[in-house]
Image (cartoon, rainbow, N blue to C red; front, top):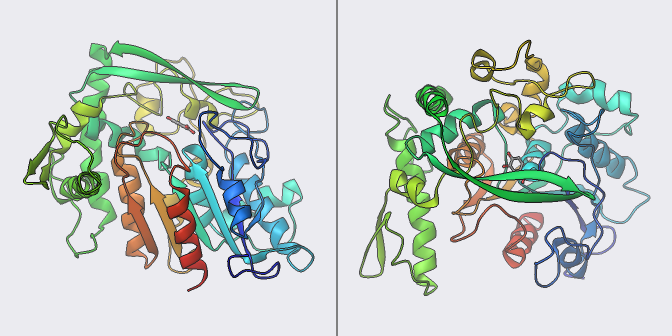
Length: 403
Ligand code: DHB
């Protein structure tokens, strides 16, 4: 099928992780989002001649599911496929991972951290097969990664936008539930937002990244500069594609459109337009109430901080901070190097407010800086979701796996 035999077919490895919650192995046809039309990613992969392996993983609400359990479980699945490659259909040298949101972050991490020795003790303890765990390619939708810097990035984007529309994530029957709650940031949350926003330029500048045109990606103390312009360019490209497809963008007040051409996208006006979804700090909650606080807990401690800012501003008596090594091995940014997984496809909906657009932009830029083949775009009108462009995803998979 599709030019592949049982021996040569790449292995599609979609995880089902959402909200850093526990995930069951995937079953083709059992959709994560009930309102989706047509075939899901696993059915599409099977129809196109791929082998599908969709591992389950432990998650943050389980005593043994805190960081780094989920990435250890995905790596163990990769090792199993590799150790048994000769006995099973599919080419385990061509594993293509896929995931959305927390699952997108783990998909990216699976790619960048292939064979990293930091995970070896966990894999040994789990009884993982004795094999390598590097993979061939990564597909990541709206990755909730770089949690060390996601709070600062969020406030760089949304500082000054104080009305919010929060989504509370819970879980029912292994299905992630989302409920909307509206409000306005308190004076204290605004103070935290100001403090976090001020941390972001130094972080961006420390990465010393350049865009594809060789322009250094920087921000000044006010948060303005070429890095912001880079995201504006990405947003303008997304809008132009939508215009070319005949969509009506006349209500998008943050865009300047002349004669069917997008002349400018204003990032600050964009942030106001799409609106804030999380209160400051978005990820490392000062009251230890976020899903990410829970992710960095352990069997004895329900939730912990994972940033210095969160710990310094903690409102919880005796709050703990997760150990640096555990925080480090959950972040795809920390393992990008020459070699390893070469192909990355990253998609973040233009409307996504779950994390700052800066997070995926920095991931894409850092991957490019290390010679990776990166396909990064912000599809127009899309929110926090994944698997919405399967034709394009599978065309990309075919392309990279036949190079
Ligand atoms: C997910 C969404 C979030 O906003 C977040 O902080 C973590 C995970 C998710 O949908 O997986």
